[in-house]
Image (tube, rainbow over all chains, first blue to last red; front, side, top):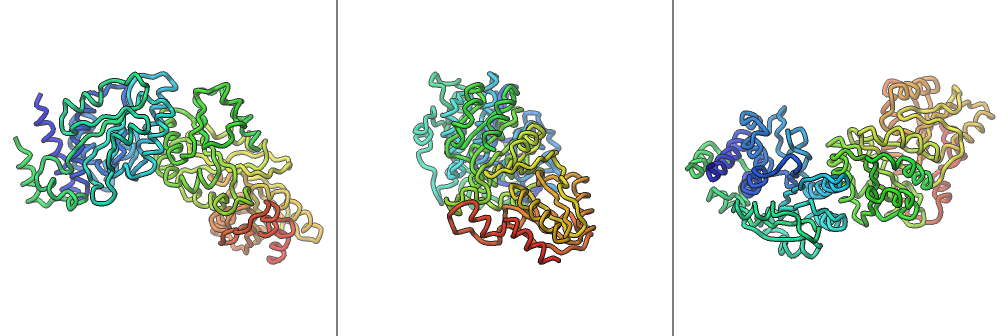
Length: 252
Length: 300
């Protein structure tokens, strides 16, 4: 299994989608490729995933295609008028549970989904991926309080801490903040698959608390130009020449 | 009305898909449900937006959630959750409010809510139910809570004792006359009927059309409104709501091919900055039998 090759392939897929559509968020998608890969490689039928930071939709679609939930060919429709694959995901997309886009909506919904499973005594873990910028939103912290109060040991919140909010209102000390709300919180290298797998699938803690995994990531990870100028590239599509150069950097 | 809400929920509690989330109000009122079905009853504190999201997540798992709080907090504050989480995703969450319009008169504008019908009417897929007697809530809630669409129930503090037979999506014709159409929703119904009776004595015979569903109105309901307006050419709408976006606007939206003149009895485009009582606010806004009669006279 060539995991490094898989990850490069997913990133190339993201680049091509955004280039073709002239639309999409590449750096925000690149920072979560390892997180999504670690999740989809291990999630079972009883598990569920919510992408709360919906602007990383290209990353989600490329990952879904890699794991067979979407045809690779459908990725070419990204952003088109009649496509199922929009700039923010919706539940039209196979295997996608919820729409997202407006930030701060995914974690409350994931908490409700986890509560539903808990009421029924169902197995499985509900994962929700939020961004550090998204953690500016008050509903993240409302949901953080709800999840503890509701005893959602089956809920894992992964924070893509790519420091996207460093220039505005930094989301600092996220591990401590979640811990202060009563979560079992930890921090991992968000580009290290082994560390992610351990953090995400380590099992429910004895405390019965929900788990927060702060994944330290690099916005634009994998292409130096995107990493250096992540802010400029936040919502920008590469030209044909840029695409070729970036793909070259992501070749074996 | 709130007692009926509690009773209906307790009656339906055996439905294992029914789950109740409250925004730290009515916990004592709903104790029967809580005691019998604690695994499906949660006081979510003062965090209404996340409460709506949690309800959406429960609906995704096949539950029929009921969220309950005061209208400004569960509607105006949560508008984007209602739009994105409920309507866009087509999730059958039931929102039950109290304290709409100026029911909390003395608490001031932050605790008033007279734009809820307007903003929710604009959302695709939203169902809006406005019962104003206990039996109306009971039958309309039972008819809709599990139908898979997001539904808003506006529960007024004041109720009427008129014998009505509401059916979801339909209107009721409670007086019949050819000179003027009075369209009314909510606890103003007795005033509308009293106005119609007084007008009849002076020779102005009125249709009184009573709405308990604001959205969607069935084709038969729209036809009934259109036929009445075609007959009379005059409409007085009556509602404890802004004159922008409520029942008067709905009548105008429906009657696109019928010429008519209209007066709207409701809350003008302003904040109600006085305090006092429900009755004082009704009087100040013409929401009385006399106010309705005066509006009809203007159309004569």
